[in-house]
Amino acid sequence: MGSITLDKVSKSFGEAKVIPSIDLEIQDGEFVVFVGPSGCGKSTLLRLIAGLEDVSGGRILIDGKDVTGNAPAQRGLAMVFQSYALYPHMSVRNNIAFPLKMAKVDKSVIDQKVKDAAAILNLTDYLERRPSQLSGGQRQRVAIGRAIVREPSAFLFDEPLSNLDAALRGTMRLEISELHNQLKTTMIYVTHDQIEAMTMADKIVVLNRGNIEQVGSPLDLYAKPRNLFVAGFIGSPRMNLIEGDFARSKGAKTVGIRPEHFDLSHEAGLWEGVVTVAEHLGSDTFLHVEVQGIGQINARTDGEFQARHGTRIYLTPNETKLHRFDEQGLAI
Amino acid sequence: MARSVTTRHKVIATVAAWAVALLIFFPILYTVVTSLKTEPEAIAGFNLIPSFTLDNYVTVQTQRDYIKPFTNSVILSVGSTILALIIGIPSAWAMAFSPTKRTKDVLMWMLSTKMMPAVAVLVPIYLMFRDFGLLDTRIGLTIMLTLINLPIVIWMLYTYFREIPGEILEAARMDGAGLWQEIVYVLTPMAVPGIASTLLLNIILAWNESFWTIRLTTATAAPLTAFIASFSSPQGLFWAKLSAASTMAIAPILIMGWFSQKQLVRGLTFGAVK
Image 1 (spheres, chains in turn green, blue):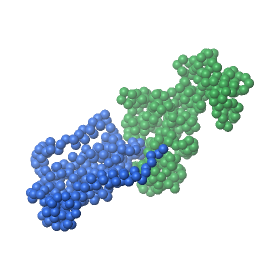
Image 2 (tube, chains in turn yellow, cyan):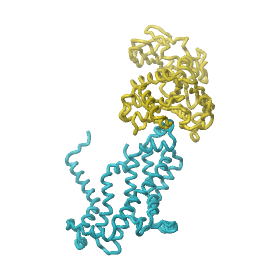
Image 3 (tube, chains in turn cyan, green):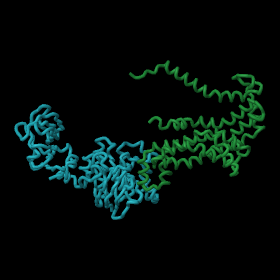
Image 4 (cartoon, helix red, strand yellow):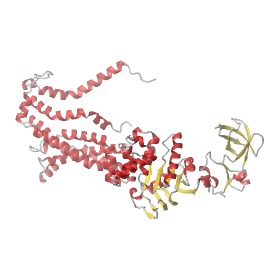
């Protein structure tokens, strides 16, 4: 079991209020991703749940039990850090066994659990090595191994993949998702990378300046962003946000159009524009287009679309996919 | 263009390094040379070739027992170092990982006690030692040496501990380690190189400490520093015997320093270069 409840949790560092007040329900077995720009308080929130920081106000409940005053070890959670935080003087085996040793588990049980964890994470051949003799991906797997042997009620991940190169990040993303399917344990995952958020999460929590902007499934956030911040943050490339006459004609202060929601044509369309940059990926084409009276527009289309710097093209936004926002930046 | 290191540069650098090293080492060398001379030779003036007599060593050993002050030196330096580490490790841990607004001030204040001339507190310390019955006792001197070296021990350990990433200690906390387990299983093993060089440096400092060891002892607890001093005053200027006593006093620490120089150099320059 691993349901987590945040009840009016707040955190200040001296005068600075990092998290004003947050309420959040995390169900048992959910994969929740905290996402937001740097300095939005997502890591702080994770550390509050872990118990590595004391809350300034509010309560944290795990499985209905108030753990606000409990030390990290007493909360039954496991954490994977961005820097892996492995013990450099211990072998992989001892790193993974450490939490069990601290819990005074029987030696034969420890050996078995370490063996099982190593098998799940493909580390069996590396058990006698030191962390310094491992690659970045292997180190991250050791850190995960150290977390899973404890059979925690929830896993906390603090930007675990940001030190890895792009290719490895993709692989590890899959491995963590698979691990979640296998263990079905609650996971809270902090990242600033919205691709990680979109691909892994059951539920995304978008944070900005210590406040929750929106909570929902990845597709909810993509299809129905509650406000301009979420609209601009979720989705890659970013949603085009257009103000002025076009927005007024739609009865809004700002209109948002995702890059993939344009019909592109060489002959005719609603807007005429000139391509400034064209990126051809084979599977997709990304175009940056300067449209008279509208501004810079990012557009994306499947497959290959013939265009290069200076090409004149026509764009027609998909009327059914428009997002409208009022003066306060809230979705209409 | 990269800086070209020519053979000429290398030769000049090597010669300069040797010259500086010899200059620093010369007093020790001359002490050893003098200890191998006869007394008339020793006072005759500058001369680097002794007659290689071992008489001085024999005389020194028969006049005064070398073993007793040597044992005292070992007990005092090792004892005070262990005591300083027992106090210093938790103190440095606290200041490195849970710093407060005043931590820097506390550190500076501790160091400032090292800037005070020892003689300024000679009378109060002497009186306290007398009243507590600590004069000429090993335990008294061990405490004294611990106290005077503690600021340096804490500073060195603090610098080492600061280099250890805090996330590793947080990981240990998440893994269920209590405060004591965190220090014993994670922090200390990671800080072993730092602790080792602190230990070595402190042993050398304690071994060489002469102000308090001479003034607070007479016979029972007197270490090698007092042993050397006893050859200089009552018998006039017996340079050769004094040199023999000095050589015997510094030999053990010189040998230890020689074998641990790698560790010491690393310790003294730690944190200077990332």
